[in-house]
Length: 80
Image 1 (cartoon, rainbow, N blue to C red):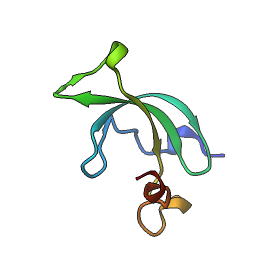
Image 2: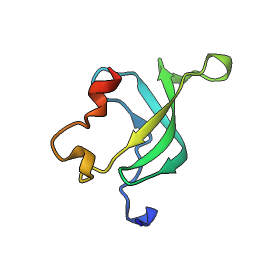
Image 3: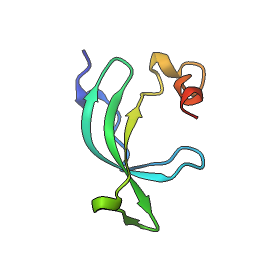
Image 4: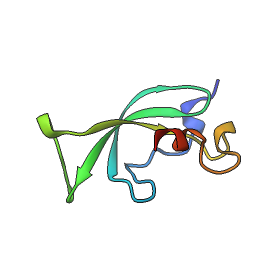
């Protein structure tokens, strides 16, 4: 099992392509392909909080993981 100290730093904000920007928050868990964090959508330079908050699960994979060997993971196609 990998020690978290050997992992690359977690980005403070995440955006993929033309997706919204998400602020990386607390860690939910980890597995063989990466780690999962709470992501909160950021809009217009300020966080949307409270009842209007938009939260997602952000799966962060190391670029050397099995799922990223040949470009973006297959699941990106599934989630479109």
